[in-house]
Image (cartoon, rainbow, N blue to C red; front, side, top):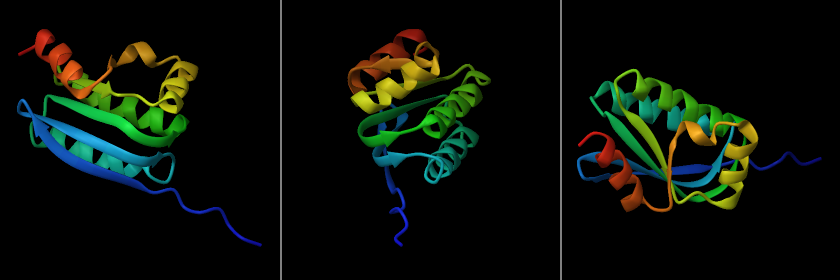
Length: 123
């Protein structure tokens, strides 16, 4: 009897326009969401007002993944900041829409578009 392979998530941190951009690759689920949450909380505690997630490399995302996006967004909003989700794959977009939370985030076609939307709201 074989067990399912563990999901893996790679997070690459970049900076654009003095804002953290987290580039995700792999799966975002109950086993990997804490990794993203921990990094985001660290960034917020270090003073990040906005965070952009480049989701173009996500191969899967479940309710736990969407939940971590909501938690990060809530922390940022408490500091008058925002979470922007950029370059959503169809699977991530579908999970966001199924959760009813798609309108809770800045959703943009690309990282530059997300930067523009955030900058427009508060430079």
